[in-house]
Amino acid sequence: MFPFLIFISVLIIQRLLELVIARRNEKWMKEQGGVEFGMKHYQFIVLMHSMFFVVLLFEKITFSREFSAFWPLLAAVFVCAQLIRVWAISSLGRFWNTKIIVLPNVEVVRRGPYRFIKHPNYLVVSIELLVVPLMFGAYITACLFTILNILMLSIRIPAEEKALRELTEYEGSFASCNRFLPKLLNKYDN
Image (cartoon, rainbow, N blue to C red; front, side, top):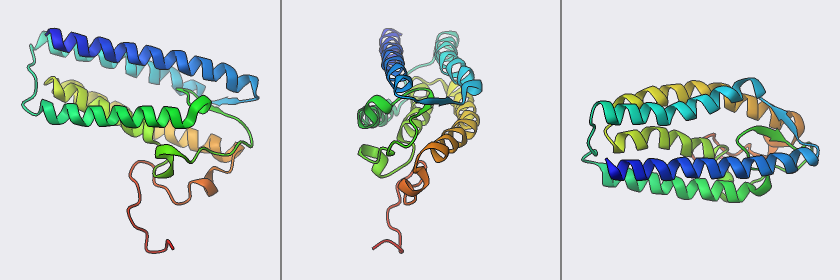
């Protein structure tokens, strides 16, 4: 149980640090004329991510779940996801946020993982919500929050893409990218 509590504590601290970064970036973006979108659904995203930790702890403690036999593989996937997260956040710099805030007429970031896919951070979150519970044998949490995340992203991503289309050259910038998986080879590319 001790390794689980340490792991979850580190993950919670990471999330809190990300919120500090997001707040700082939000302040800067709004000072530059940034426009916020998706305010109605944002509270549900916060609730879902908060409840993830509560449900994971509850399942782990209540059902005395053990480490998965595949935990080394799952841990490796988790670490790779964290590297992509850091890459995505650092690539966006001051434009990274947990909210949908868009600066009008600013060039869309196309460096880092954004060269390959439109939404690397959502991919990372999706991986985490599945892999972290599986690592600790919390299969109910893995299933429940994977489904909730799919529902949430079905609202969040269209709202974000609509905001970017309205205020930037998003469509032209990302015409060659998929949302989550990189295009390996397109027969029409030169």
